[in-house]
Figure 1: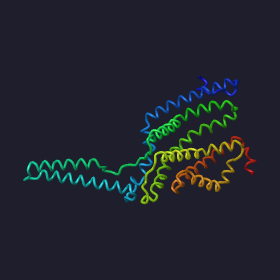
Figure 2: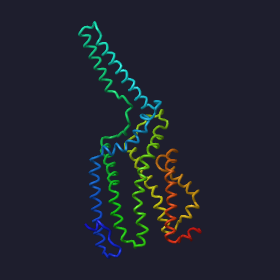
Figure 3: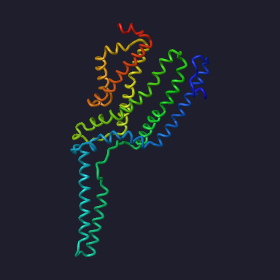
Figure 4: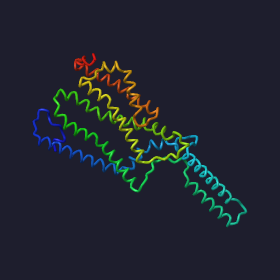
Length: 324
């Protein structure tokens, strides 16, 4: 089990059986971490669903359309009008019940009417209710919850899983190869998490807002939980992967395919390629496309800086590539 806690040295000589034993140990550790993370996420599944539902709650016509357009917004506005009417009726009945020259029976009847209308007013929402996805079928709430829990468990286990993968692969690299590979491997989880955060806070809200509010007066805007969560995870996975742009360019640079000088000379083509990538990602609206282009351009500039440093450390041995 100790091999699961530290990588094997490059100079160590292991048999095939030793390698298989190390692989088994790392798989057991990874499975145990996944099981613990899954149990924790299942315990907190309500909180996780609230996190995923927040972009929908803040972006659908029911909560966002100030003019009351959309059938859901109109129905919510009508409920609020009824609620205010009941509240006004309750106050009127209470005032009448306190009037003079009433018989005890009349006074009790007015007091009862005031109480009933006040209860009716409290039962109706005072504000527009926030939206949540709908489910179809008997088992969908349970199966969708299990799917969400599994995705979050994988995300929370990612640091341990990546460490186990790195520790198993790195001994095959020579010290020189390790100096090149290790920084790129360390960048992967940080860039992926940065992409997830960018996608959740800056990409999903405008994308869902545009897509859900488009022609909302012509549709009953309802969204199924399975499709909504699939869209969210595809969008977040896409932003997490495109944030790996510096790692991919560093790998190509290490292979002698691209260099910093080539990236600087091809910046016009890079802008077009970034625009195409941003356009084909989930959330096909122009707002999301522009928002996605900004970090990709910044990552491209960061890649130029990193490749410049790498070229200088290698003595700029990519002259052949630059000439091409």
